[in-house]
Image (tube, one colour):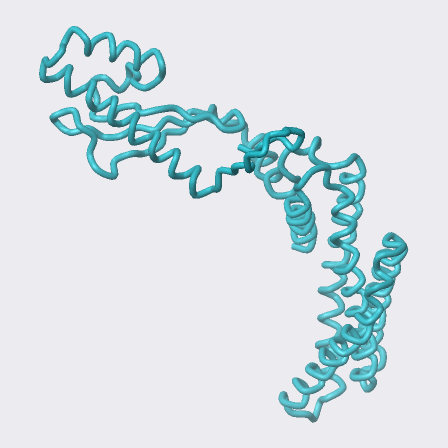
Length: 289
């Protein structure tokens, strides 16, 4: 619970941390279990019998004790509801009506959904931010749709380019040892990383014309893939072509990484930039797979 920003009170705003929230829940469960245990113990031993029956009725009305648990070894402690999904917390009792240690368990109460609804609910939990669509701007869906298509075709292209590079380096080094092939592959990757570092010096320009830079970066990525495919035609030029392609792809990666956060920030309506970023990256991974 946070203090309203418009409040004129001089007291400091207090926030419940996740640890404090867990402690609060545990204390509530402990007190509820103690109340239910005492009620069951009084009823079974006959102590204050006249007061125990109304207490049991009150607890049953409040959801603390359910009729289905009266003749079983389990007792209902409390109910919980989160986003329309409900659970019951129950605990096992001994012959004296007391709760056994470490016997609290949860029972799901939500109605099973159709397989298609379950699938859609599972997908939504991974690809859209919490509170969607109210938590993001209307332009979020079109952007993520095109981004998913880009990653889908980019992932497919990556399969072909990798296969082409492997074939090219093998053809161009028929008489070479596997160690020489590995050295060429390492030089190719090293050239790309050097190009990434050199291009990163232009980072101050990434705060302007984000869309144009992102689009240019994607074009460089496709150009690099084309150069990699070209190594199949001239395998003896594998190293220079592969190095040039890797430089282009790493420059594109710098552009994509540098412009990602400002773009996602434009989609977030509240303080959910982390959630928007995580779900956006998940969409890309799903499309890649």
